[in-house]
Length: 607
Image 1 (cartoon, one colour):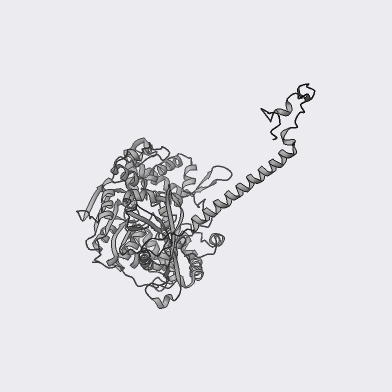
Image 2 (cartoon, one colour):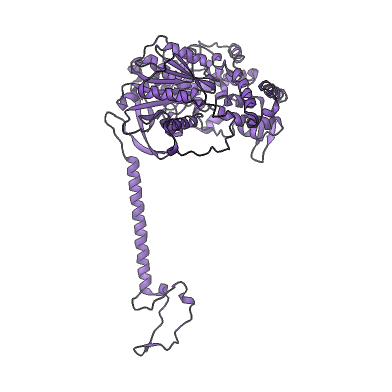
């Protein structure tokens, strides 16, 4: 606006003010000429256009600068002394930066001529510790087929609080799993996976009729992956961990494995005892059964005890358990639930309609499988009791959403079943001539095992895949006893574990010379599932200082302050970390980790 223009106190209202064109005020004898509205003036329009252009140019420049800086951030390579990994920033975890890297490993660590130039990629994600941290801890969350990277992203911060920031934490995807390439899958895409999925119904006589279909399915697995297929196994993954250590410039293995991850840890300690520095195996899968036996019914030996224990604890917790009104004692409630299950089995699936997009059926098998998966972690008991109580009272909505006959979320994109199958079948006795050619002889073996592991409702289907596995075995690994490791192995277990019983943990302790066992007195998969101050302190002391428990078999109490039936909708009162002492912070982290090992989606199909 020109400096000679009359001041305008409110430009937006100025056109609405009375005109002063006829006013006789003069300046130097001449009338004052009324100015045109500011947005109509030519010079102002030109200046406004220039201002808009400058603003636009400024925004464009800032955006370009941001993109360059952002790109530079993601392209930034982080290198550390003694390491050969090219790390790049890849997000954050609760405000703590993550870095990602990938190494390449030979297809066959044990026979270079078979490998040739064929390789696998092994991706890793790291949560760094303090500036004083020197050692990296590797994790495997189980499966087989679980992603260590996903595990770290879910629980890394709490795990670091539980173990101390003296360590960097690394989650990696084992060869063929998750983001590793080539991937252990049988189909090129989700559509093909959905199309070719055998429709088992849990009835042995029906499921065996899929025998030929399963044979074609396993052939597809071998053809799709090609020559890499036979090398997706636990001994090779154990050797991959040496490659990770070498890339990190670290001599000894620091490792915590859960569930199947204990098989990986025990295999590593057997193959490479001189590099076994701190190895923890929690929720132990018996390696002697895993590698040698056709069936694994021993894994389920505590399931009936756990089933009864849920109802015993229900009575103790009273109204907090929604099933408490169905009996005076735990045995009463158990009998009522069992009777309802029998009726559901005899009468067929119960139809449930929620709305026009959510409806279906709840069957004996789906409910049975849901109860089994709840055995993994007591945090699921409240929801289980609530769903069962509603279902037994005629309302099936909660049960349908929690335990549908068919997974409502399954869109065919989840390949974990195939990851699981590759590792399991390549590790264990599989295919012909280990298994008989005759389908009914296979059924006889599978049905015999099913009698001892009724909670794994898909066991027969699972064994069909093993019996017809087409990929040739490429390893001759056998577990052995009397292994001397650089530093003793620490074994952990709950008292009652639905898939990895305490008996397996005891055998593992006896396998490795000097190993010690920590048992947390409770129900759940892995000791980690039970909040225990005793176990938390012993684990940290082992990882930080190498301190072993005094006793060969230490019993740790489960903290009674954490009820079994705890309503997940009720938010716990927030406690500031600033107000916690070190011990309280340790226990807060341990409680947060109680459901760190969820049941896999194939939990009901058996090993």
